[in-house]
Image 1 (cartoon, rainbow, N blue to C red):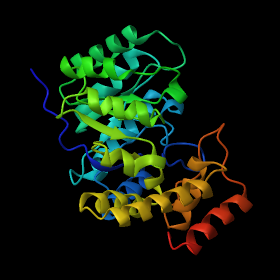
Image 2: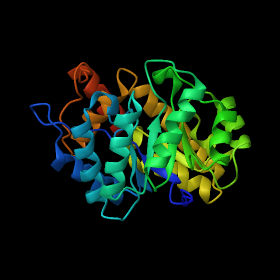
Image 3: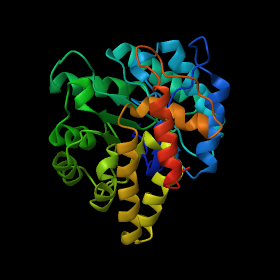
Amino acid sequence: MAKHAAKKVGGLFTAIITPFDDRGRVDVEALSKLVRFQVTKGADGIFPCGSTGLGPMLNVPERKEIAKAAIESAKGRIPVVVQVGCADTNSTIELAKHAEASGAYAVASLTPYYYKPGERAAIKHFETISKAVDIPLLAYNIPPFTGNNLSPSAVATMAKNGTVQGIKDSSRDLLHLLDLIDAVPEEFVVMNGTEEYALFAIMSGADGLVSGGASALPEVFKSLVAAQKKGDYKGAVEVQKDIQQIKDLVKPGPIAAYYSILRERGIDCGRPRAPMLPLEDADARRVVEGLRSKGFI
């Protein structure tokens, strides 16, 4: 059976952080609150267990718990694309099947990470996942973290064969993204995952942005997508400048900073999982005060 296109994937998808309680366990209540926050602030979709969500640090049962809670909290109001990629194919398939059974709109998978099995093995990896589920599958390309890069030609081949219906590209290589957009069919979904050139990516044909920063500041990233959509390019450029200011403020540790910002905004997600450390108090104060001075919170 041919899979339907990933038509609902576009605009702003928030790569949400994973909340933890004071014992380091997944905090489902805080997660549900975070998802509801995203819905009310206008996010077009949720992307749990990605890099911002510390997916590779979580075990399989935890990732199932997060997927189920995110999907239930979204309540069908916005689509949920669950990031299921693991270093091995079998665990990835287990998570993909669980996400489908839980009601995910689609799943996304990292390329296999740590080891470098080569592009042919990566394509086989995606083919095996695709055959295991009936919902759309997106490839997730983030070579600075995985050590494996999917070429535009490989993605185009998988698109043509119906293996994947979209991609989240976090290559941090704008020319790579442009080549990718040019190589794939029109109905294929291309989501950009690099915030620093988000506006240019969308103007060049990307369907939207998957943003970790939106976990804490969804309004800012949503306003970029909205301004571009209505043709307010001057306004969109100003928002892109705002995003760069935010990126500069959170440089000491972006993911840790999102925990601090959300706590300031009334959503206590605990602290990031070790070995990642929370921000030092002075850095947390500087981030929050900087955002407040610029009117972001």
